[in-house]
Amino acid sequence: MSDAHVSPAPAPAAAGSDTRAMVLVVYGLYLFALLSCGVAGIAGVIIAYLKRSESLGTLWESHFDNQINAFWGWFALVIAGVVMIPLLGFGLIVIGVAFAWFLYRTIRGFLLALESKAYA
Image 1 (cartoon, one colour):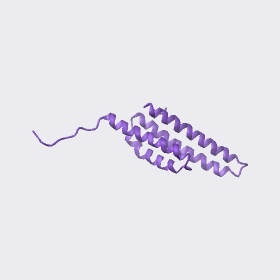
Image 2 (tube, rainbow, N blue to C red; image 1 turned 120 degrees about the horizontal axis):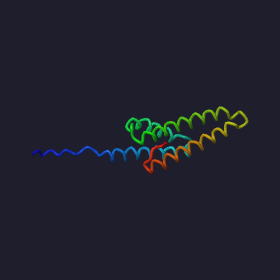
Image 3 (cartoon, rainbow, N blue to C red; image 1 turned 30 degrees about the horizontal axis):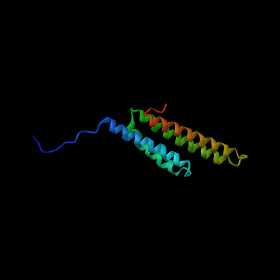
Image 4 (tube, rainbow, N blue to C red; image 1 turned 45 degrees about the horizontal axis):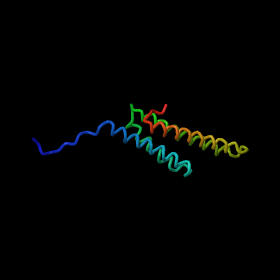
């Protein structure tokens, strides 16, 4: 018999709950980004990129994909809106749509993640 204690490998559920927690953190950062002019969103998308590879083949992969796509879609629409502001304020409408779309995708993803469902 050996005196050395070997700790068991973490259960898959624990790894899944860690990933779920990171998904929820990113959604939280995205919600905060709407109040902080997008700064927290940059941190969120970086986390999503870093954690996506750990979630391959799980339901959390769809959330990280949503988070990355939502960020870049929001970013592109805001930039397009800023460029279009001189066109009779049309850019402000585009920026408003960008925020509404981003808010929808973030809240929907957050709610699905709370229920441990894939973002579909």
